[in-house]
Image (cartoon, rainbow, N blue to C red; front, top):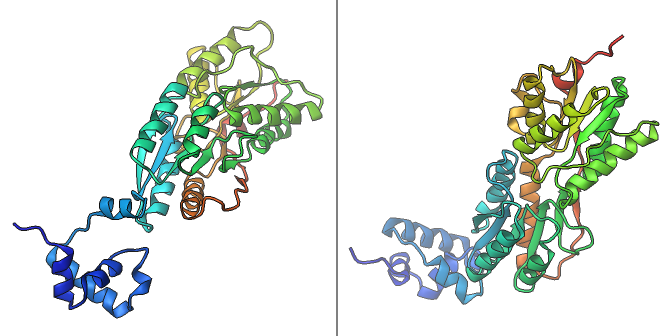
Length: 341
């Protein structure tokens, strides 16, 4: 079957080829009368015309693609973030290309190089950590970069993030309100600013109440179930009284801590109350359901995509960081704890 051309569409609609081209171009259709646009689009549908978006984009220096670099595709929190990005791009003629860094600077650099080679119009990075600045600045010379979820303080790269220091304070306040005095935290990777800020907020709020947070010398190399379990086992192996409350720096680490408690015949919340972070879907369905700090991933993804598309149009737009407020979601992993006599 012979390929349908733009000339065929124009002939069917009774317009010049250049008019048909403008009518089918989302960026230029406002230059054409609405009735003509409708007639051209109807002709294209009738003939089964599919335009060459790559060629069209390259003529204007665009590919209509937006890169998204995530740290871990297996982290359940990232799915709503990516969905928010994709939904925001859908009506703007952009398609997302997704890459995974696995929290490795070399993989981050390769992902950015690959997206630049494919001439992505912009890149949203959700997995930035200390050590990625050089690769990000190199990429930023060629295309807009937006940080989402994680940010790099002082980098000047536009970011859409969460108030993680406030989130850490909310976790500490919740434990204090329920009478805990022996309180520990399982820290995420300190190369990631969000985990550092959660720890700072948590520690400072306890200090203001005259309580020192119980700290391990180690922290999680990655924010995973396995690392949460490992750190909880180190805490259980310490001499002295067991903490009655644990703040895990994300939900996956909280799940690992919960598993370690069960393996050592300890119960949550009767022996140890646990708070996670992110409010991923499974926190409401564990036994017990996990109290957590909600991070609105879908909304954050939409805002990051909106920022990226604005920068595609104008690289000089204001780059004020956007920060979403945290909300504590109380569940049975903390509400069922009672002080021992």
